[in-house]
Length: 192
Image 1 (tube, one colour):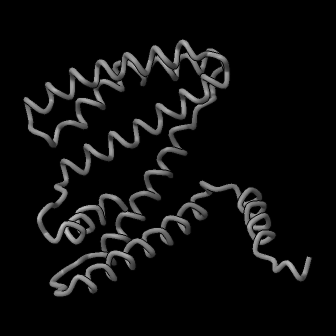
Image 2: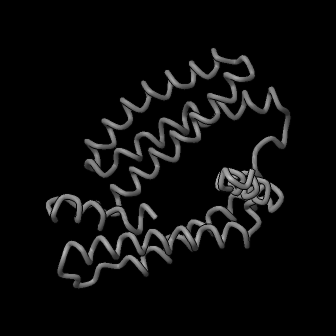
């Protein structure tokens, strides 16, 4: 949904003074996704009492990202900052952390390629739904633009949820257990 609605949201928010180009959106997305992956791996290693490896990977990644991002920005402009951080991730954290996790948990501890392909398919459906429904066109007022963004986000989220269940990205028993737990929170106190 970030790719579909990020630029229109920024344009509405800044009253048309700023926008998000596709290259910058890809850079931001790369930075956020890789940071989330690295942080998850670091928390796992910390839980496995392998803080030194996690700290080494984080430090090496940070130093490498500073250098490679500066080179990428100088070479291709601000939109390439994500290319520098992605290269730094792949050279440091992207191979140190998975190798250490495999050493601790054994082979087969990471998702298979088919699962990752299903996640990408769900993301593509989400993008298409949000972009189609959230398209601004020639809307005149800010209110209409905000309504379009909210509707696009709602449709995109719904498309993701439906696709995630259809592609079996979510275990139905786990979803039912979460639903029962949430329903327990909303039961009126008088009926308890």
